[in-house]
Image 1 (cartoon, protein in one colour):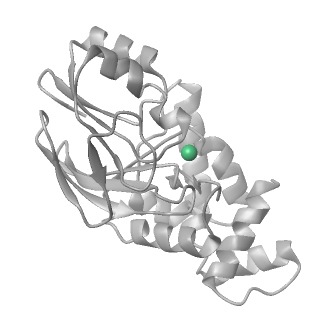
Image 2 (cartoon, helix red, strand yellow; image 1 turned 30 degrees about the horizontal axis):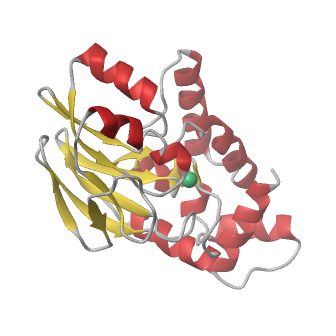
Length: 241
Ligand SMILES: [Zn+2]
């Protein structure tokens, strides 16, 4: 995120490409924000701090290198330098203390959700239960449909291949698959997407819908009692897809 010459860095897994971008664009860092403790999201922080002394915002319940501001769900923060305000949302599941940041930037709502929600998919459950992750994803799904969703990885095309296995007849999904594949063919990112697109095509936000639950049950080979069981079966299916 950028305002004039100042820039806030989100989830710097690696310092070198970040520094190259800052130098190329003439940006001076004003803050670092981290969503969770995994190395591919925080690994670049020490090298960035060695060069620039800036505040580091990160989840209170996780170990974040150089953290100066410990965040928990319900907190509201103002990121210095770019003067952007964010609400902190607790989203346990991928990791136990994972947070997401929701606020206004660039003329509209934005969400930084790390490895909780992906474009077309969701993160693996390393430290949490299906129930926690389903609740976390449901909280994110309730954000405005125009929210631009910045996730942690470019996994979209592979995620959508799985989505098509779950909902093979969805015309909205088929259209999205073509659109995202074309972007990758042009070497463009598929991120950000929007919450509206995710709600319409991401199976992990759709586990409560009868057609999605039926597909998950058919694959699991037994009936699924509720939304959480449906979500858990989808996640298991994707783990082996
Ligand atoms: Zn992660």
